[in-house]
Image (cartoon, rainbow, N blue to C red; front, top):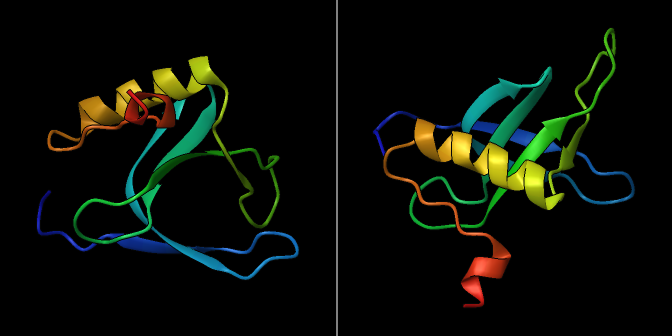
Length: 96
């Protein structure tokens, strides 16, 4: 990974404590914005792909974790192509 400083974002889930993530990459596919986030700024960590589901005109973005298999695979492939030194492994693959 390059030496650039990763942007930190804070999510405030309903009824839960705020959660901090570092943004590895972002893209727009099919009219939706997606971000690839991780829990550690350096080294291996858990990663999530989040989809912005906020409506036009909303003040704050609302993100959901991408969990539908086909959507997750397609967006993960795009992110892998954008990041040379990152391999995304789904939970299913890690059990093999």
